[in-house]
Image (cartoon, rainbow, N blue to C red; front, side, top):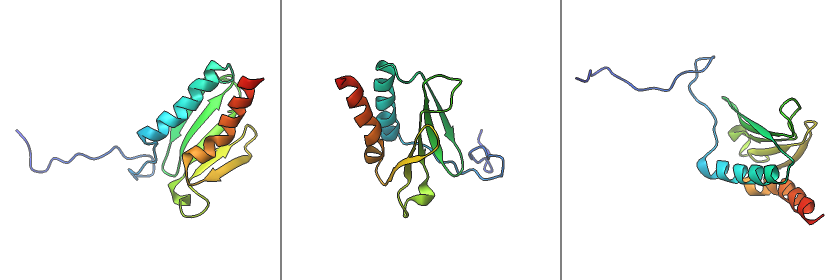
Amino acid sequence: MRSENSNVSSFPNRNGSSVQVGFERKEMERIFNLYGRMVAAGHWRDYAMDMGKDAAIFAAFRRTSERPQMRIEKRPADRNKQGMWTLHGEHGQILKRGHELAGVLAPMERQLMKLVSE
């Protein structure tokens, strides 16, 4: 039996808001494609994801105990500024920003091509 007052809602986060930024399936496919190739080349061994109220973050590690070698951030609030995608390097420096994920991942894919050709 169904009650008239039954509602389905998402579980709220710490500050009471239930809005969360996440990756879409095609974005995850693109990111995991790069991650898999870097693992196969022996450069990455682990990853972490964080999906919060302001941003979704994917980080790739050489070893679990180190800081991430690369971090991809999706911040929809910056969509109309320099683009919602940001690629950060190992020391936190911003390597690339843009509106399209493919363009932001290009420096990492070029690095992979160099590693294969050597």
